[in-house]
Image 1 (tube, one colour):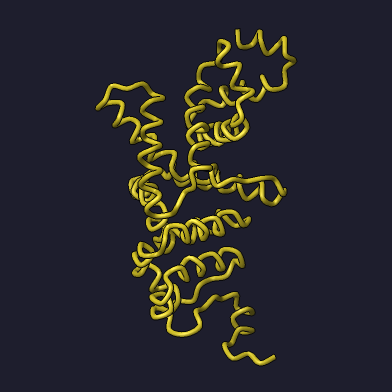
Image 2 (image 1 turned 90 degrees about the horizontal axis):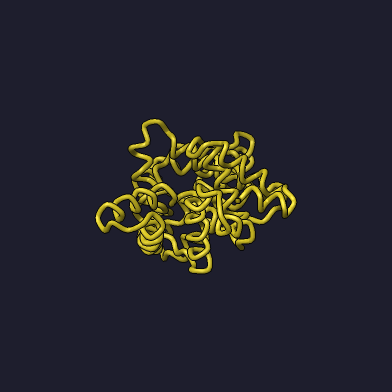
Length: 261
């Protein structure tokens, strides 16, 4: 084996290093910063000091990378069984703000670490699904990261425009998704169903009537229900609400109609 870059030594010490001068290499292609994070998370390696130090200073270079390319890199980070570790690395090197600036702003004021826990739980759920070879979708991933910024924006819209909860939430979704597009592209085929999933969080609270019953047959019900379970696990909604929707799915049709009456 001709090891020109001391690769075997790095493997033995579980260390990841940039070939060449790190700052120059990152400036040549800023996406290498995300790749360094991804490989460190995937292999559970540490990034050597010389290669990790510039990450905290050069993250702003990612703003010049086409959003479509950053979208692809984002999926590689979070849809490869190591989403939680990837998130921890992004936090460590302060790179989250380059991909999800609104989320990063909330994390800065997240004194009780509630939002960090919410994201970790959501990513852990995604990791488990991938390990079990279950389907995952960017729609759910972006919902995890954008949910709380969207909620906050919806509150502002409702206060200013006196609109309904659902109208304000839809408007907030449109605004945040449009702004997110300037950082990491988010195809409409995923952003549109994400709005359905988030709006259904409000509709889950009303458990009586034919409209509530129809939610069970909604095309996005399963994703919305999974998101409800995530919120309940983090204490955002009462576990009783999640348990009710869990139980009602097991009932026979006649019993379901009675439960919604």
